[in-house]
Amino acid sequence: MRARAAAATAALLLAALTACGGGDDDSSKPAAAPKSSAGEASPSSTPEQEHSLGDPARTTGDGGTGVLQITPDTIVFTRMASGETAKNGVFAVVTMKDKAMTAVAADEVPPITGGGWKWMAPDGEMIGFDSGNSSSVTMDKYDNADPVQPGGYQWRAQVFDLTPAQAKGGTLIYIDGEEKAFRWKMPAADSGPSVAEVKKQLAS
Image (tube, rainbow, N blue to C red):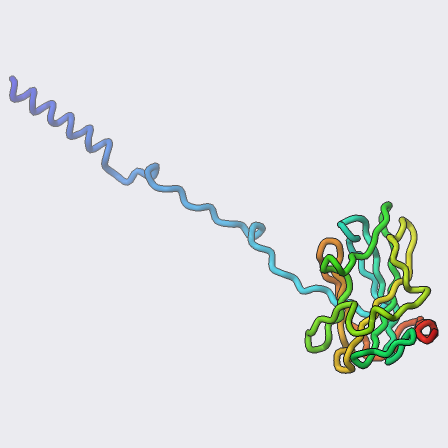
């Protein structure tokens, strides 16, 4: 009797062990990592749109305040302007119309913050607003610098002192209040509706 009881107990233990530890129980496997959907993929960088002289661009104002529509209007190349001679060979004078597009005043980003206007030469060299003698060139109509009030606009200008090679087919670049860059391909000769007026002011 004792031998039969021991054999029965051993058989029960063996069955219990087989049930607990055996087999390919899927619950013990780690869950598969979820696959990323197409919508979760990293966005590919899109090339910046390049505008032409006369094309408007809606930009974010200084400090992220307001929307300023900027339209480079006219470009004039000259060796002398406002009684100053271009140190590097030629001044590139670009005028633009700045218009406030929202119910708050908006202003251009000042260059001291790293934004604002730059000239990119055909070989890629970046030239700042204060190149050579450019800061000495002034024009009454285009020297506005106050924030543009809602519903209003101002005429402004940027002057770059360039070498003749830098002036041939350059790109005007503006970096706005959200650090977004806007680009305008510039002609290599005087162009725009206000060439005569700009030349007259530069000669005074």
